[in-house]
Image (cartoon, rainbow, N blue to C red; front, side, top):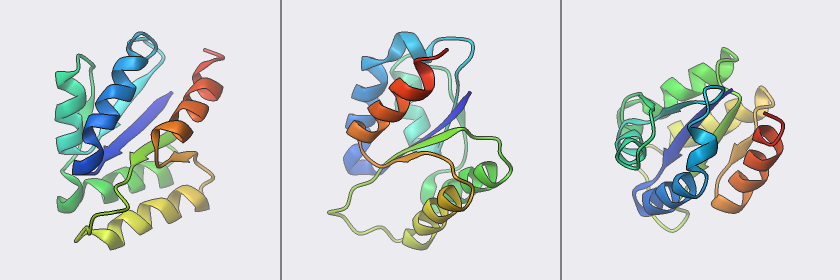
Length: 124
């Protein structure tokens, strides 16, 4: 099971809190994490192993979207900050569209991530 992690700057603390709350499950051998660059650094600092792509604005969102399209990602946890402007908004919308096109679960906040997490990882 591969889960992609992305968080806007204003939501990185929420991502780290979510990861720490579920750290034992994310340490399982069956779970592989991939993240955009800066989010990956934060997740790594929280004590988890993660494969890091480019930073979101530099193409990391597009790299993860490509992995979704290639069926290499089972779920995307993308904690978005709806109250801030993002210069790479087209990449964000493209990633969300690709998740919809390929029927890949996409969580844009901790509540939805928990539902996906409990459903997908509860059976592992």
